[in-house]
Length: 211
Image (cartoon, rainbow, N blue to C red; front, side, top):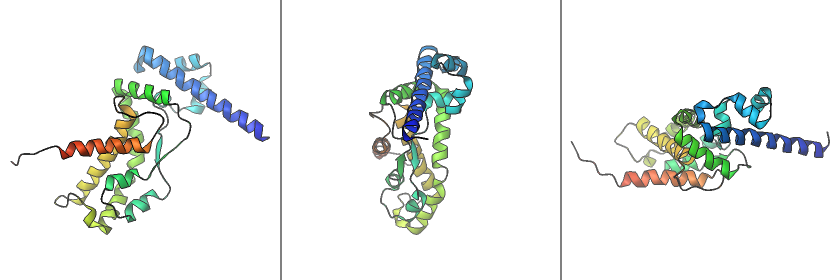
């Protein structure tokens, strides 16, 4: 097959995927997520149901998109063996963008839709769970090797691991689904870091009464 043929096929694939996403977003914005069907998306995008499922696993994916972050190769080993005075930043430093071509307008619209449709939070949460599910063991190895990196030494180590994972998870959630969060353009790991910093800065201002 000629290179130009491959190029044309890829352009067609990108165009079709864009039509599916744009149709899904248009319909959900006008009718609400629960009232939109795959058949409606196919009709508006002028594709068959079979074509839809060649590109998307579900209606939810058409709306929320493919998860834009992944851990770089060797990330778990790096987290386990690298000393750090900010374990959350160490974790986030190992995130990479999973694809290069992301329409900023789609991202903005998706954030609004997810924010306004609680049912979609599950889809986003499932994607984050897949991202973070292997992280716990890497953090356990890290604290075993570098116990001085702990910031909550009076609590069991598993509690501190859970806290770190929850901050990372919540930071991704803030970036992915809150349209009020100041992030622009396509996926950006630095925006996730900004969200994590917002959580930790907020926590530093909390005072607790002893009981």
